[in-house]
Image (cartoon, rainbow over all chains, first blue to last red; front, side):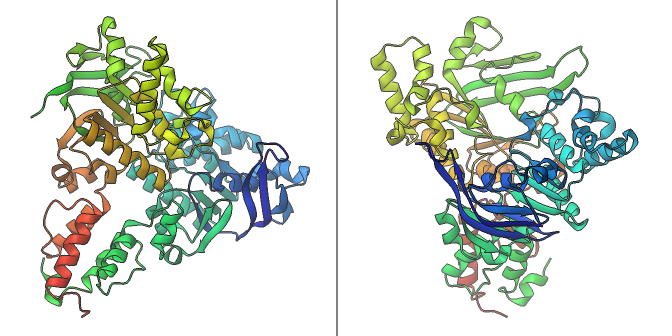
Amino acid sequence: MILVEHLTHIYAPGTPLALTSLEDVSLRIEEGEFIVLAGATGSGKTTLVQHFNGLLLPTAGRVLVGGRDTRDKRVRRELWRTVGLLFQNPEQQLFEENVFAEVAFGCRNLGLDEGSIKVRVRRALEMVGLDPGRFETLSPFALSQGQRRRVALAGVLAYRPRVLVLDEPTSGLDPAAREQIWQVLKGMQQHGHTVVVITHHMEDAARYAGRVVVLHRGKIYRQGPPRQVFSDPEGLRAVGLDVPMPNELMYRLRQRGLPVNTGVLTLDEAEAELKKLAPHEMNSTK
Amino acid sequence: MCKAQISIRGLTHIYHPGRPGERIALQDINGDICQGELLAIIGPNGSGKSTLARHFNALLLPTRGTVTVDGLSTTDPANRWEIRCRVGMVLQNPDNQLVASVVEEDVAFGPENLGLPPEEVRRRVDRALALVGLGEQRLRPPHLLSGGQKQRLAIAGALAMKPSCLVLDEPTAMLDPAGRREVLQTLLGLNREEGLTVVLVTHFMEEAVLADRVWVLSGGRLVLEGTPAQVFSQREGMQKIGLALPGPAELAWRLRSSGWPVPDGILTLDDLVACLAGLLSETGWGRRQ
């Protein structure tokens, strides 16, 4: 779906402020994949995803979306239809006078008729947990920050781009709202959408990602299924990341000489793994 | 002993009262924030955390009830300047809080506005930067700092006003894990070593367990308060309002309820590792069945 070949991006090239943000990055994202992009601040995550919808162009190398080169202006003009990008802090970018108009914006640009816009907007608001009847007519400015965040997400969901790219969609949201957003994205993936999410929440990444790609100083540092990537807590900490808590727990128990499997990612798995260690009768008591 | 620094009595806050869009954000909040404590405020989105935090330095004023800082009421306009000097505020997005193009000038912005003599400004800037560990970055432009550094710079800016209390509204929400650790270490140091009162609004339960006390807000009300151990022993109550226990506490609870002799009060990963390692090695459980 997205093919990144030897992508280098330099901000302000040829000036004293030149900053190499990505260096020779190659990445192949298949249709229907759920990718989590991780990496410390400044590792190039945002720069990378802004190439997916043609917002940034390669300094060297190329990016193909659905086989079409983003350097081609005609391709770029239509790219937003395929790749929906939710920026970091989207709640600061709301501009319509009410929530309905805000969420409908993308659909309007697609040229859909009023009827289907209405259906899609309501559906999208429900997906992000906002009751359409209550919220549609409110000004985005009357909402809390978490609600505004969800309105912005609904705006991308409503026009149903084949690829959803979200830059830290859950920062500043409470655990329940975070869970809901991950579930929504999982659902989109199950309907065939490709999902790319930037996040610092490693536990969420572990639970939802099919593949985790870790960037470090503009290069791909690790990539693979979560179980594999998170099997190296020290390597990840060295680049400013954490591993999920259950994983860290097992790793530390192992360091203390206990024969536990360190490849666990979720609390459920950790619980099951620990129970294997205890005498049988211990786990049967209630 | 609690010597109240900020006292909240019957605080109700209504946005746009009597107009369309009227919304009750806080309802009848009562409580004291003690001098020198680290208080965490948690709650789901829209529960009123940020609204409450903004009352602590008179950015918002009560619709009903009172908020006093060291005995000074926020409703009296004559007190506001003094209150804002005593209570520093740091917000979520560091990029929105930086005002200058050089780190030390950014920190000097507040004290200069107080009209202090240059030597005093210099002293305060040096001290503030040292406290957050940014002394060596003093001449760099803020936009070249990492997220954690930017947020520590925002904290330094607040410290330069010599507040006795620092209120932080989700200061780590936008940071990567390393940046989060940096900011937390800085806050713990300021609290434990400098005696600063710290109020930390957060969505991270792992941060709340580091506090002396936790307030839990839901639907604009203060529904639960106590030490982290007390608050996080209320698993059901927390779940009901959409909050989860910190991971280690949740796992400890699950093991306990399936009969493991895991004690109450396990909150951090360190606690859990120590407990399990002891249990599994001493009892010979470590052998696979």
